[in-house]
Amino acid sequence: MTMQFSDIASQAVADGRIAPEEIQVLRELGWADGQMDPDEAETLFVANDALVEPNREWCDFFVEALSNFIVHTVEPHGYVDQEMGDELAYRIDRDGRVDSLAELELLVRVLEISTSVPVSLRSYTLQQIEAAIEHGEGPTRHGELAGSGINAAEVALLRRMIFAPGSEGAATVCQTEAELLFRLKDAALYEPNAPEWQELFVQGVGNFLLGFAGPEALSAERAAELEAFMNAEGAGIGGFLSRMVTSDVEDSFGSLLGDADPDSFDWQAEAQAGAELEPAEADWLRDQLDADEELDDYEKALIVFIDAETGESFVPRP
Image (cartoon, rainbow, N blue to C red; front, side, top):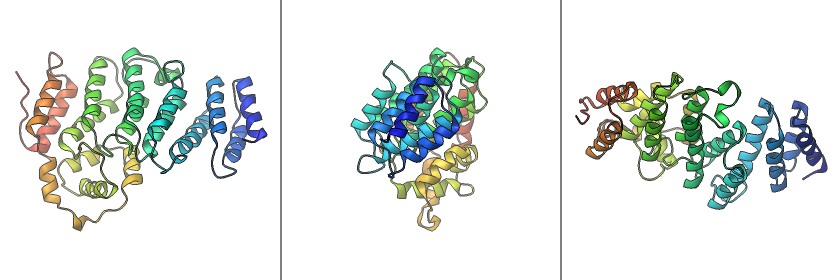
């Protein structure tokens, strides 16, 4: 680590603020030799802890620099091992929780650009959003994000985490994540939620029930085939999900999947399999619906979606 890098970071710690021109110098110095070193990474964490009101330039630099350091330092590049994942969570969670939105953005970005991350790191990241919604405090509840319900920033972060390549099923929603969506829905059911929340709830749970999720992450080749299928006109659930997916998710898909050859894929078989609700999945859904006393608007919207995609009427338990 150069003296100038250390001096600028130390001054930011002392002042509690950092100017855009200083951030630019840090950016240039940090990649002067092509990569950051551990001392520089630790210096950025210390500076972030000290800043009173981090600006957007700082947050962008903090996330970009440290996510690249975390994901591309250990061989093979793109795979965050358990040691690195534990170290990151420990560094962020020294006082028992994520304190800044920059730190939460860093966790999400690591999931987005990684081929694989430890289950513990993914769970830790999701827990931060869940805790903020349940308790009304945390990094997504500061300043203009303060308030009750599920806000737009939290919806965006959840969407990015659930569909991140480093999630449990790349480009799909797993059972753990679908159950999280139900818990969050129940926790904020009577609060003034962001309009995007119902869309994500229906899209996420619908993806788990009728999509292509499996016990293991998809290979890049298989994911490319499924992405091509989902974008094909009239492809059952794929058509529905493609209309609902935001540009954030499309960007995540695009970075992971690449191009697919539509002639090499059995569209009809996948459409039929994707639009069928298996008995075990139907039982799981009924269990989720039974967790509260009556069907709410979110659950009704989900059932309407399932009926439309399967061509059958889903019947909850009486």
